[in-house]
Image (cartoon, rainbow, N blue to C red; front, side, top):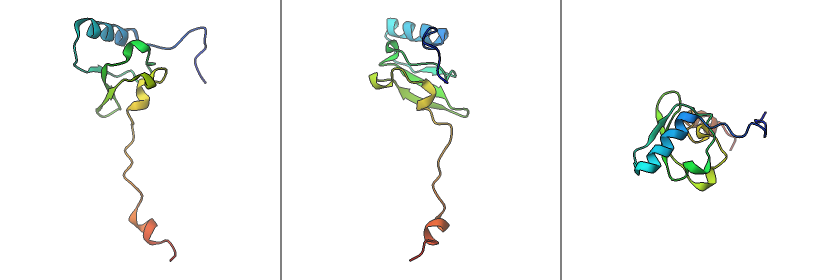
Length: 93
């Protein structure tokens, strides 16, 4: 279920303040974020983030195409290690 239009997008105030301070000072260092549910707003474009995926921090550079999505969408929490070799060798010839 999506968030109501009346409330607007969810943007964490702490993250928003850190982005505003980084843009004002011109800092290029990535901003560490644990809040994966934070919506990306146009002010975040051009900023480097490190989004926590439960184990490590994934580097995310925000572009215009990402506006409206959540930060957590770009930091996968599961690692796909591939299918087993047995499944491919068991296929009929």
